[in-house]
Amino acid sequence: MKLFNLVCLTSLFAAASASAANFSPADDSVATKVCMSVVKDNKLHLHNTLKSSRLDKRIIEDKLHCNDLPVGEFAATYGFNTVAKYLGADENVKTSIKDIAKISDKTIHVSGSR
Image 1 (cartoon, rainbow, N blue to C red):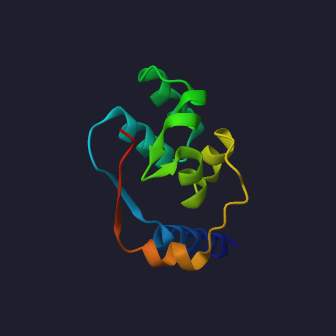
Image 2: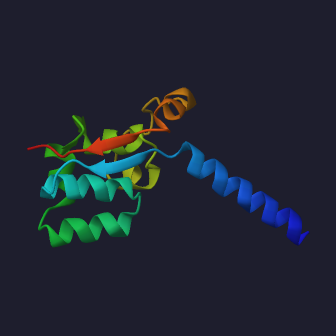
């Protein structure tokens, strides 16, 4: 049973890492730092980044764009569902597995709106 659990966990982590694209910041701006915080898909991390940057969640929902997408749509498009829900993004954004597989082997440079 332990071997079965180990095999299942290993395959789960291998599948997750195989489909994940690499995100790297394009610059050191506050907007890009917030966008990179979205990439971590952790509400607490995003909240702390907003707090340290003296930004409000409502303001970034309306004004911040990551890679020319509104921040909530950016989160939903790339599968950062925890943060997308936190930002109140529309959960009906269409993302297909084919799109994710297409970007899985390259680095995506993330930039915030200026």
